[in-house]
Length: 311
Image 1: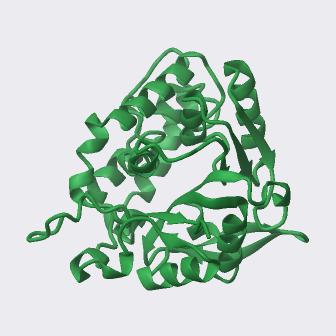
Image 2: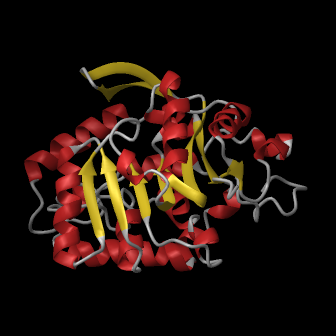
């Protein structure tokens, strides 16, 4: 936490702090995610970062792509609430089919559905759920139009690093639809890029895919306004009351070192290594690498716990 700040680390609704990084090496739930990824990898299940056929390109010897410390923080933070005994008989994950969080929840007995716009990830998710006999189903669906049958029936909705990919004008609608999915008292747990990074994404509308600019949420007030307008209330602290020093944390902790690890993710070499592809990969990564241009320098990660009022 920033110097002189006390108690910030324990707050639910906040950006990632430097002090969070160490927990991703030793915390219970980050360890559980690493173990799950390792177990799935050994079983050659086609999830998480594609087929995992090549240890060097898909994973790296320290799981930097699948289990990087930023993603581990986003996933494991959910259990700050679930470990307190919050009801979760039914969850829906939006935009994360094939990700570690849906599988982790299902492996721990939570019944859920994963909704994603990418058919390949949906197919992977359903395959793994069948092989592992998990209470998890994936569907190709847009939360703004396709999940009406679940309205008012979900205890938990998770939305991990998706909001920044939704065009700005559509974000309030997405928030309202997630509110509608929840039963009274239900929890929305989401994370998003917090900063100034922007890019052009393909977003699916009824007419097909269109290219629209999306990007990080630039201010806490912007996000809080959307959440409150949709009907939510914050669980725990009001993020608008975070100290100015914390609200100013718009770069991911230790972003230069972690960007370099992403770039040079070639630690595990084995008999399946496709040497021609690897050489092209290395040249491409080295030519593109510039630490000062890292997207992580232009955004931090923000977590938020929102509740649909019981009355």
